[in-house]
Length: 214
Image (cartoon, rainbow, N blue to C red; front, side, top):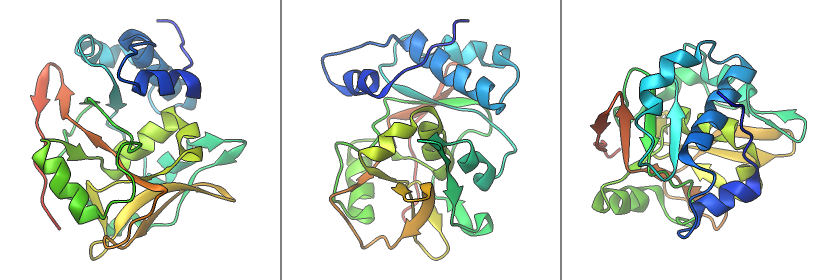
């Protein structure tokens, strides 16, 4: 397996409707290589079945099953020499959608650059109509581990999770570096975006979005 690094310009090209480079294989190798480099996983062979599932996917997110805490995962994010950190109590975090309890791929992902300035509840309704699913906190963190420079463009609301009595977790950039915090679901901003995926895949099986509105 080659170690492939994908930069911001390449990701922007991949996000455009007309382009399909880097290839799916290179995108997968970039994500696996990042996980290995940071010590999040040690055995790339355990992802062989998932690698066979990505050939028809345009843009996807590899989400490994790990025992690392949210705070520890945030520390793997590095941008301009600063590490990510969490301002949340993990015991007060919960997912409002079900995700596989194993390594999986979130398919047909969009990191929010098409969904700015929208209230969280409205976003959930729009995603439901499109048969899409909002990202969970862990999905958002892994995306930013792979592509930290995205936070220079916009924040990412993670409407697949909730904090305490209904707050929406969000990833954004502050002076100290990438931060995980939350905001009220009734707030929206031109710099906040809602990330989503089409389905979640593990070993050839697809899990379509099913979410609980909170």
